Image (cartoon, rainbow, N blue to C red; front, side):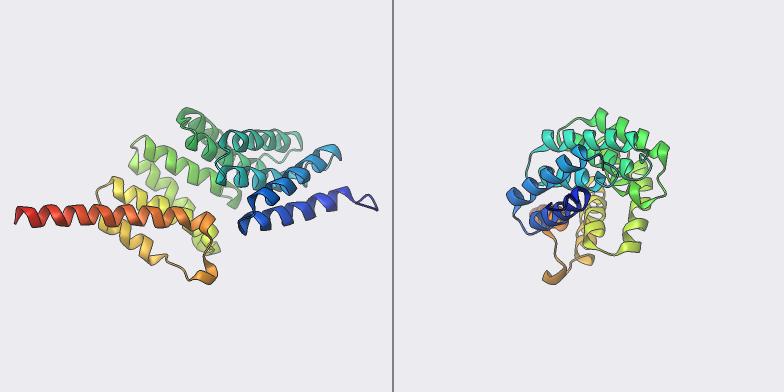
Length: 231
């Protein structure tokens, strides 16, 4: 800051803010991520600041500030278009915006965002958020075959990375799909197969997996009780 290295300051704030959010200090993390976005806008370094939009939107979403998270994603999408990066970070932010829209119950908006994003390209790692959002969108519509198709693409990307940040959401939505298909046992097996030790645990990306696993086990228990009562 003293020497006027604003772009570097924004990058540092982005890394610090993201780390604080991952550690559970969302207030401090969001404050620094907002500052990173503001500096990138003020200094004309938006091309380097697109990651800040994604990280800020995700942190806001994780704290239940879904409207704000969606708005930040929309600002990031516009910034990506402005600097010609709609096929890279633009895709990331379109996926983030679609996930926010789904959480807000705006299914049609999520469908429009993911359809537009998929036209830009789905074979790149930048499209992971888009694929995840599209799977969830198809699940809500009851289009299980379409959900399976997009899930396979997201699963292949996650497997190549092998990090719970990627594998956790994919496994959670796959288990959700199996529950909708009436395959609670299969859903429980998917959750168990991805259980990770505390040293690799990342609650932001695996908490949903545990919740879906609990639902699967509950459904199995209800089915077992019904069989016992009928016998």
